[in-house]
Each structure stands twice: as structure tokens, then as C-alpha cells.
Image (cartoon, rainbow, N blue to C red; front, top):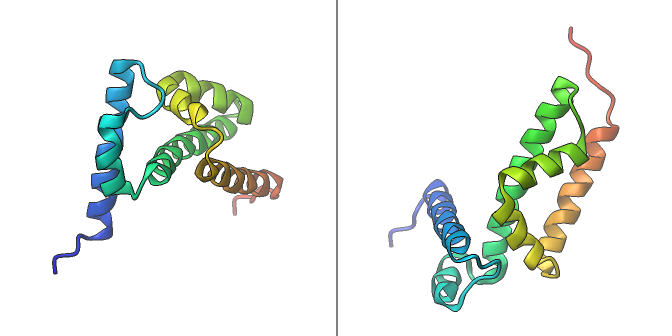
Length: 127
């Protein structure tokens, strides 16, 4: 039995998510059209898995941008949110369209907990 490596599966999922998102942008949809349902089911195990992948992409971009803003003293969470929304408007629109999905609610709670924990920590001083 040929089992793909974890990195191969991650790349394959990320690529499919980008292809589907590009199709959503081109068609103007913010919810997944029926023609993608079979591939989403096969690759992600359903809509929840696909949304989890989109959520990971969003939160990764957000966290990286927030880190940069804080490091440069140029803003905080609200600015990072606005900037990433401007950079990835359709991704944000798709996530907003599915805002009631439990998968996304859990991801947001988890990331907000990390953000709260991170921002209340004392700064580490350079040696």
C-alpha cells in the first residue's frame, strides 16, 4: 500500500484549495458550487475539512502580518486584520460566508486564544 507522506498530502490539499479558491474568484461565488463537492469530499473529507484548510491559510497570513506590524511598531490586531483582508479579500469573503460553520468557529477560538496568550506575555529582553 502506497501511503503519501504528510508533506505530500499537505501540498496536494493546499494546491486544490488554491484551485478552488481561484475558481470562486473567477465565478464570483463565495460558497462552494456543487461541481467541487466530490473533490472536496475526496480530498478533505467534506466541507469542514476544506474550510479548515482555508482557515489555516487565513490565520497563517494574519499571524505573520501581525508579527511584522508589532515588530516594526506599525500597528496591532485590527490593522493586521484590515491589511490581510485587503490582500486576500475573496478568501475572507468565503470564510465570512461560512461563518456559522462549527469548523471555523473552533479555529477562530483556537487562534484568538493563542493571540491573547501571546500578547499578554512579557517581552523577552535580548541578552
